[in-house]
Length: 204
Image (cartoon, rainbow, N blue to C red; front, side, top):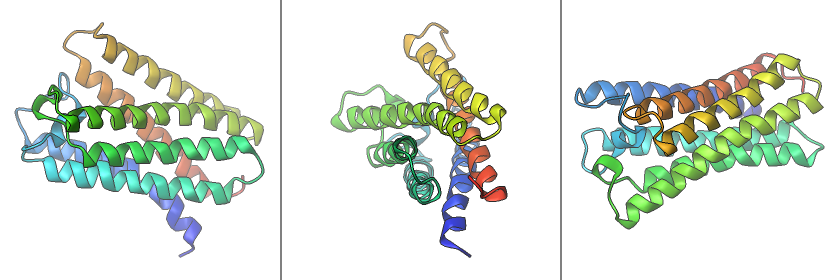
């Protein structure tokens, strides 16, 4: 199997694994609410799903994001905007890995240095992810890809941004968890679609 194919496959495996582990970890903790609780609480320090989420969901999928981003640098050549767009996906991966290294406190409401670093890396990951979707929409436009992919990518980034802003502003009380889940979900599906498109149609 070619190295490029493996790298692109990482872009498919990462979102599938991320979403699957969220479902599995949630099922392992009947008391967990996907509506009101953050994804990070599935990997909170001392929880029964800490190991699964920290090392499987956050760190390993973050590594897969970086592998996918590195592959994109070899696929899309000739343009600083491609490098920036690929770099944002890599930064998303680094943010995920950092969020896994530094687990949040129980309830993700502590004031420990680990909690603060977890929040920082999670913010970097989410911010980079939504900016990456917008940036790749621009790349698709420049490269003459189907217009619906351009619109889909940009819309994904904008919708994810709105959902996260609503979550942070607490304008929808009791729904912080589902807002984060939705934002993470649509960004994950976007990456899956992007990687699958490259595998099926390698010409860029």
